[in-house]
Amino acid sequence: MVVQARQLRKEMSLPEVLLWRELRRSGLRFRRQHPSGPFVLDFYCPSARLAIEVDGIAHDMGNRSVRDEERTAFLKVRGIDVMRVAAVEILNAPATVAEALVMACRERCGQAPPPSLLPQGRSPSP
Image 1 (cartoon, helix red, strand yellow):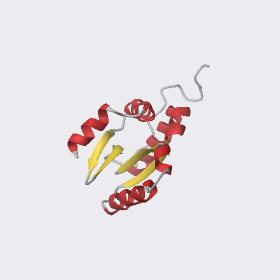
Image 2 (image 1 turned 45 degrees about the horizontal axis):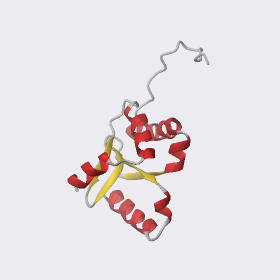
Image 3 (image 1 turned 60 degrees about the horizontal axis):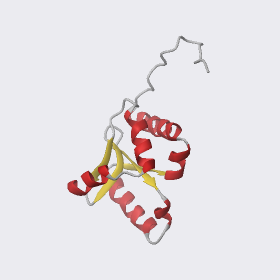
Image 4 (image 1 turned 135 degrees about the vertical axis):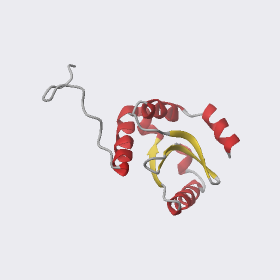
């Protein structure tokens, strides 16, 4: 599994690359292409025990949904929840998707979002 995970890191899809870029800026620790039992998770936040799966068009074909359910059940038994994100959503708004995922992770960890660096009552200039 570790060898497969290393190879997958080298071959990430465009949505995975865009999401990884945003997640790295969040201040939370994420792992990409993280092995977990017989599966490799697209992204994993260890402090939140949250797996993030990027679902491309292949997830709508064949028995992929059954395999996804098996993966989710396997992880759930181990205390890891799964959030699925459509690849097209990431392509359309990577920062927005990442922000929602980071918020979910922070809530699971009991962390407040980092304070704004702007003076109170001020908003950023356009």
